[in-house]
Image 1: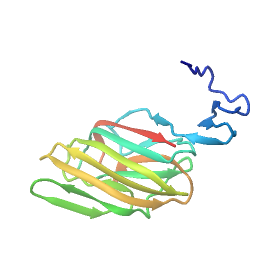
Image 2: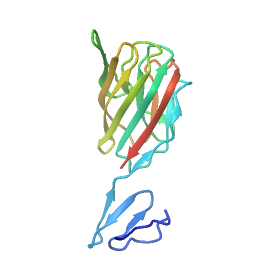
Image 3: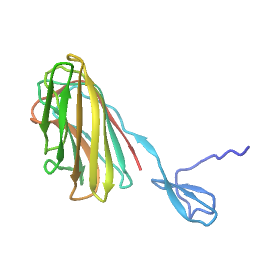
Length: 196
């Protein structure tokens, strides 16, 4: 049995046949020295969603093709919906041009809405604790699609979202905010994982 030990994360030269290298990405080489990117998953640093009107995850690398936003017991001070927006550049978040909507449904009621300012988890009551995921996937170029579902504590409701956006430049950041822009986060945790 052979064991591969990686002792450095610095690229020291062109990979020889059969080697693996790291320089922000992982590559595998075959006997013909052709290289293919291998999928890697990176976890962000979790953020307590207990204050403020937005939570930003910045500095996403250019190789990212899929991002999952994770909510655990996240709550707002009011009845606005949680909104996920995509960013380009260092501080620019796209707030128009999204195509899609969100819905909230339970045993006795359904509410839905069209959202153009982000991917929204349709909420209805303050202090509802939301847990679940929103997955954002690269379609081609700077075009992204999203889908997600979360459960909430008020009356055993579920909330869901889906849509797409064509960004003007490469994605570099994700913002979690609210539709009205004024409700504040008051409970829970938010984090992301991203992969190539």
